[in-house]
Length: 475
Image 1: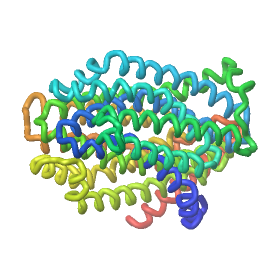
Image 2: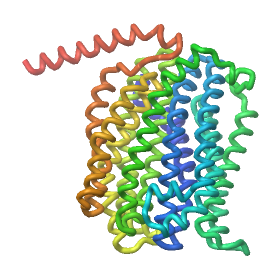
Image 3: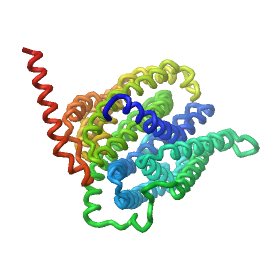
Image 4: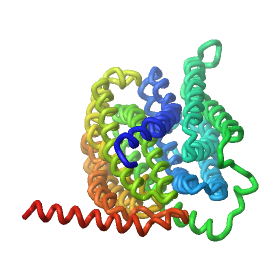
């Protein structure tokens, strides 16, 4: 991006539609927790624990989804149709395996998964029927994510947004009817919310697939090209996807350990955490959408050989997106009473929720900055450094600190919660320095490789000028 005007234009035309679509997709799964609120804290807490299982599922397939953005966007920038089709095919296979594996476990042994997260039998009994139904939606969700990422990477951002809106409306309407037993329907409680989620997943995937097949684009999905893999392509794909996959898997495990600590707190704390996760999910979905857009733009620029544009866009995004996150969390914090009132929480849980939002006001902005940079690295072809920093910080700082605070020292809940995001500060210092270095630009296309030496020379001269200016200023 050559100037601030072009940056803002991209943010308004590409980033915000993607962010809204991401927000609506996440909202569809969170509507369950919100609408269950009228049934009491126990139902809210149970569905919240089920959502943590969905988060682990998300971590298991997100590595493949993130790798697909790297290839989709760079191949799109280089007008490589075969590369896009091969990427779609191999990612489809990998994500299908994850989706069906999780679906089988949730349908056959939901009590096992729930028992990992909590020792409270009442939550397990409420969550079992919910998980058995939602499990059927998991394979549908991964296919929908893959198609959405392909459409985003090829600059078709409106269709996923519209499909998400339709899916959300279906989810909300069915939840209203089945949770509370309206219009003569049975009162199904948490299981009714699961039916709404499943129906929403079916409608969303169906609409996305129809649009993908019928939309006009210079790059089309062709079955004849999707599974024509050769050794060189598979090696390049796995070399880039494996670090991202490890990142997401280990991150999911780390979050699971943190959630186990939370699941052993008092019932008000668990209910407050379930409500907070909904609010956090809204924020995460929005800045996750911004980061997806950032990845698309950076990947296209690197794939086409415009490394300077990618570098400038990364730096501006790392400042702009955290500011947006801070504003959203601040609004949530100021409106905490009506916001948490949607969940039917008691006084203690409401008090917990308020302080959790104030703690997240700072850490959320820092987390967004880190997330944007890591996603940008991946899109530019660097998949290892972000993984080392994120997983190292999580397992060396956040997980042991939270576990000791909650399971060993048995500190008050808010003290335990304050340790959850402590690794973000360490990551911020490391990733800011790495972003400035520009070493994360590693194109996978021929066009990108040709202009790489020129970009390295530009960075070297730029850094020399900065050092000289600093030296003159100090003297």
